[in-house]
Image (tube, rainbow, N blue to C red; front, side, top):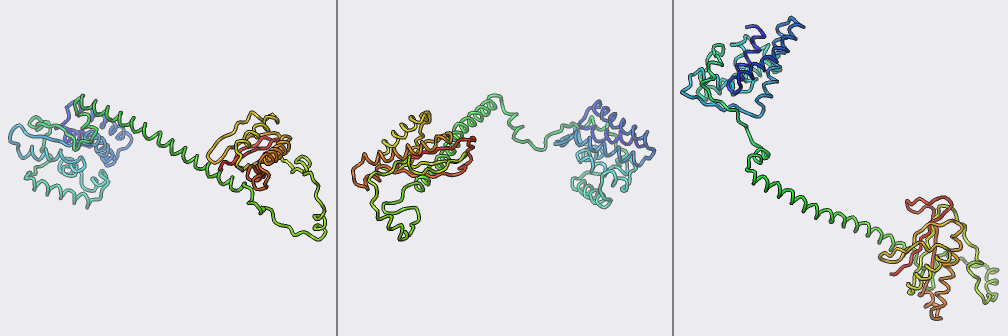
Length: 377
C-alpha cells in the first residue's frame, strides 16, 4: 500500500460507521488532491506521508467536533466488529497510534513526526489504550485484516452530542414555551431599563447640585463682610503726622462712589459682587433696576439653594459704572433702614473682588465676566 492509498484508506476506515459513501469519497478526493500536488513538488515519500496524515487528522476533527459515536449491533458482534467499533470511537490520533504499524507500516519514529509527540509518549498512550481494551473485554485483532465497508452494515450508528448547552435546550422547547420565555426576557429588560435610567439621572443631578451648593455656600462665606468692629484689612499703626491729620474735623458730606479712585479693569477678569443682609428682596429688585439702567436687563437671575446669582459678560467700559451703581444702591438701602449703624449694616452690605480667569469659562477679548451673588442664608 503506497502513501496515497494509505491516506485514502484511513479516511474510509475512520469515517465509515457514521458517514455516507459519497461523503467519504468527497473527503478522500479533497485530501488526495492536496497530496498529489505535494507529490509533484517533492519525491520524498516520508514528507508526503507526514503532510498527508496531518491534513487528515485536522479535517477529521472538524467532522466529528463535539460529537461521539454511539452504535449498537443488529446481532451479536464478532471480535473483529467489536474491536473495529472501539477503534473508531477513539480520537483520530489514538486510532492512528493503534493501527499505524500493522495497517500502514508506519513506525513510531515516523508517527512521532505526524502527531508531533515523542516516541515514549506514543508508546505510553498505546499501552493505555491496550489496557482499556482488556478492561472492556475487547479482543484485539490484526488491524490489517479489518474491512470497514463489510462491517458497517452490521452496525447501527448515530453521532450524538457529548453535552447540550443552554441554547440547545432552549431550542428544543415547544414554540409556546420559547415564546413565553422570550417575552418574559424582553419585558424584564424593559422594566430594568425604565428603573435604572431615572436612578442614574437622579444620581447625576444630585451630584451636580451638591457641587453647586458647596461652591455657593463657600463663596458666600468667603465674600461675607467682616463682623461689626472688625476688618479683613490689616491694621496700620498711624504715625504722629497721620494722627494729627486724623484729628482734623471730617467733612460733613461723604464723598460719592464716583469720586473715589476706582480700580483698573483688565480684559478677561472675573468680577464678583456679593450682597448680604436682611433686605434680600429690595437688593434683588434694585440690582435688576441697576442692570436695566445700564442696558444689561437681558440677564435673568438664577435662584439656587443659598442665594440668587447673576452671571454675564460685559465690555470693560461697563464695569466701573456698574460697580459705582451697585455701591450707590447699597448706600441707598442702608439709608432706608433704621438709623442705628448696626441695623444699617445688617440691612444690606456689599463686597467685591476680582480674579483673572476664574474657572474654565472662556472670556472673549475686551470683556469681563460679572457675577453678582445675593445671599439668602
